[in-house]
Image (cartoon, rainbow, N blue to C red; front, side, top):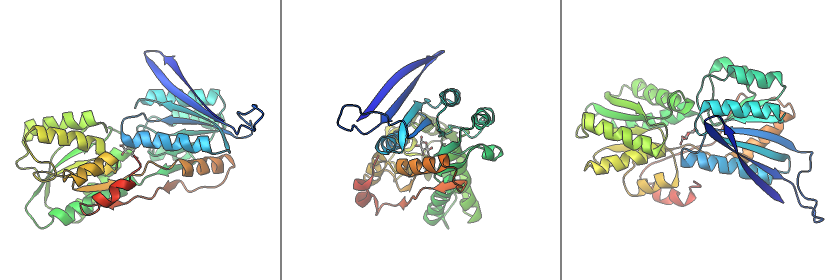
Length: 332
Ligand code: GZL
C-alpha cells in the first residue's frame, strides 16, 4: 500500500510544500506500511516552473514509490528559491535521512549547508543541475544532462542553417540567472558559433527564468526595443520560454518559425506540437525522466560504492522532419 501524505509547513513569510511517499507492500493482514528496512531519502526539488520540472518530479516520486529499497521519499518543492532548498536540506539533516538529493536552483551558495550534511555523515547526490567546482567534494555524484553539450547541439544546427550567409542576428532567452543550464547552454552555443567562425550578432539576451510568462514578457521587450524585421533566430534555453515568446511574436504580427527561426531545449509535448505547427525549427532534448536511474544511484551511494562524479542521461535532437513522428513518444 502506498501512502502519500502532504503537509504545508509555514516558514516565515512563505509556506513550503513538502510531501512524503512512504512505500510498503501490504502483506494482506492490514499491517502494510513501512518495512523500516529501506532507505529514507530527502529530495529538495527546484520548483514546478516548467513541464520539464513537473515530469522530473513525477518520475522521481513514482520511482521511489515503486522501489522497495526506498522506504520514504521526503519531497520538497522549493518554488525556485535557494533559501527554501537550504531550509529543506537542514530539515533532512535533523530528520537524519539516509541520502539527500538536491536539484540546485543555482550553482553557488551551497558550501555551508552541504558542509553541514557532510558533518552529519549524510551523503548528497545532485539530480539535474550542478554546482560550482569548488564544492565538488561536497557531493558524491551528479545525475543529469550535459548542458554545455546541449548548447553545442543548438550551435551546430545554427551554423548548418545560417552559415555562409549574411550576418545572423540572434535573440537569446536565458534560463534562471546563475543556474547551470543557463550558464552552460550559453557557453556551449557560442563555443560552436565562434569555433566555426559564424558571422553573427547577438542583438539581445535576457533571462526569462525558465517560465512561459518570463519568455513572453522578455520577448515583448525585445520586439519593442529592436523590432523583428532584422532578427533571424531566437535561441530559447527551454520550451516554456520559447512558447511564451511565440505568443509575443504572433501578437506582434510576425510568423514564428518563418520570420524568426526558433530553437528550444527540453522536448515537451507542447514544444513538439509547436514544431509540428511550423512555429519551432529545432528541438534539443533534455531528459527529465530519470527517476529509476536516480534510485539506483541513491542505493549505490548509501552502500558507499565508488561512482563517477557525473552520470549523463541520454538525449537527442530533432528537426522539422522528426517532429510529427516523435510527438507520440514525448512523456511530458
Ligand atoms: C534542465 C532543467 C531546466 C529545464 C527547464 O535540466 O534544470 O530547468 O531545461 C527547467 O525547463 O525549468
